[in-house]
Amino acid sequence: MADFLLPDRHKQRDFFTCDVFDSFKDDIASMEHPVFSLSKKPDHRMLVYERNDTTIKIKPSYTGLATIFDKDILLYLASALMSAKNSGESISQTVRFTSYDYIISTNKSLGGTQYKLLKEGLGRLNGTLIQTNIKTNGKEVTKEFGLIDSWEVVKEDTKGKALAIEVKLSDWFYSSILGDAVLTIDRGYFRLRKPTERRLYELARKHCGNQVTWKISLTNLKEKLGITSQMKLLRFNIKQIAETNHLPEYNISMENDVVMFTRKEPPKESKAPKQLPKYVSKKSVEKYARPGESYDQAESRIKGLRDALKG
Image 1 (cartoon, rainbow, N blue to C red):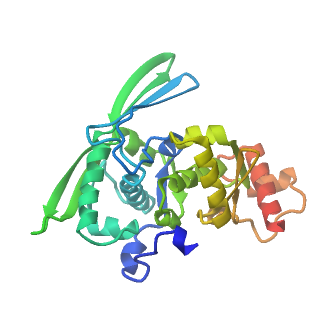
Image 2: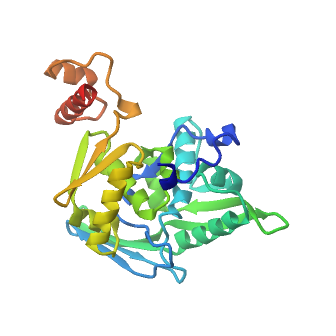
Image 3: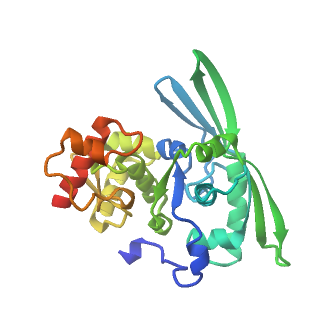
C-alpha cells in the first residue's frame, strides 16, 4: 500500500505543528460539486453543472482553474478557523499564516519548490470564479465570486520564499465556517497521490458519511468527479483502488458499473455505545439520537452502527 500513498513526511518532525488542529475540515459545498480541476496541467475549461434549476459555472483565470491540490490551502484555513472557533476564539475573514505551518500540516515536502507552488495555488484560487443562480423568496439572483477574495505575501526571506501569507476568504467560503457547514476529513487525505483519489474520498465522506454504505452508478460518479477521461479508464482506476484499498476510512468496490463505498469502521465521532440495543426501539432511538437528527435518520444510523459491529 505504501507505493500508492505519499510518505507521512512530518510524523516525527514537529509534533506541535502537526497537532495544531483538532481535525481537518472540508466545506460541504465544494465536496458536493466538482469545483476543482483534477488535471495536473493548466486547465482552461469553463465548467457548467445544472441540477434542480440551479446552474453553476466555474470560470478559469489565464493561469487555469484552481486544482484539487490548490484546495489544500482552503482545507488548511478551514481547519485553523474551525479549531479557533470551537475553542471560543474570535475569527476573521482575513487570515494570516506561515507557509511553513501550511506545508507541514498538509504533508508537503520542505523546499523552495513548495513555496513557489503555494503562491501559484493562491493565484489560481483568486482567479477562479464561480457563478451561480440562487433562488430566495421567489426571486432568482445570479451571483459571481472567487474562491478567495485576495492574498498577499506579508514577508519573504532573502531567497524569495514566502514566510507569511495573508488571505481574505470569499464571503461564500467564510459563510461555510460561520455556519459550521464543514465535515471532518481524515489526515490520510493528504497522502493520496492522485487527484481522482482525493475527489473520490471527499465524495465518499460527503455522501456515505456516517452511513454504512453509499452506492452510485459509474456514469453519475464520472459526472460528480468532473473528469473528461473515457469511461473505461475510470472503470480501470476504480478496480485498481478497490484492489489496493488505500483510501482513508472507506472501502470501494464495483459490480455491473455500480460503485459502492463502505466504511472501514464506525466513525470516531459516532462510534456505537458499548451496549447498543439488540432491537432498535423508539426509546433507544430517542436515547441515542443526536441533536437535530430526525427519528428516521437516528434509527438508520443506529441500525447501521449495530450491523457494522456485528460484521
